[in-house]
Length: 267
View 1 (cartoon, rainbow, N blue to C red):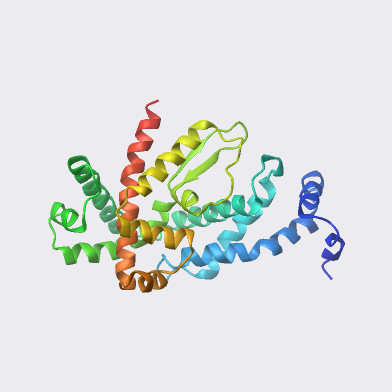
View 2: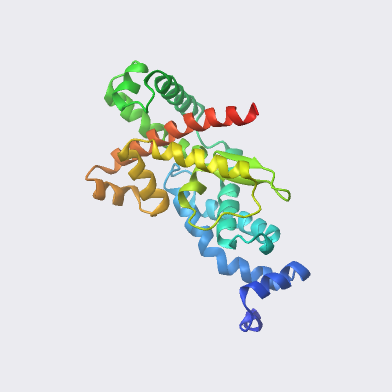
């Protein structure tokens, strides 16, 4: 018997209040078990974009560390839902471990940077997101080779989507990421400073300026939670083509975000 039955008549708010006051291990374990499915969900999403050499169970283990960190640091007074806060911590813990084991080959990282540089230069010249054909030409490669390259570097999307700014809101640094903007449907923390809201607007603007097909892929994948295969069925394209569109969209956003970051760092 775990003893959780004593919590049956308590609301979650009351449980959080007790935990913050006492750091009771039983309450902590209760929250870990209650939100363990959230860890599996995040790990499953990450697993779709990493090589088979990265074990799903390892991702779950990394995520559990993030969940425990979220439980220990959660502050209900900040008026943000625990689930929203925990997802950020879980994802961050998984990414930290993936970076630590350096799972992505250096050559792939380099190719990803080359794509981003080409996109940045073309956007500066064209005043709009470049087409696949334009990027391929700028990189001096056939279109088919460029599409194959997009598939090769797709694993780098994980780090790309974890691009974050840390804005001091008076308590603890709080991240604003592309993925958070896409996925979050909750009210933003009212304590967050105006600078973070401005960054969110810039990210949203960059998303809206993407070509329609790339927009659709990101929204269906991150907001609607569909798989690449399901998105392919909706858009009537192959799963590999969806992966290419997704990778290209992320590189366009990375290019925009680099410029936004430079603007804020110069303030």
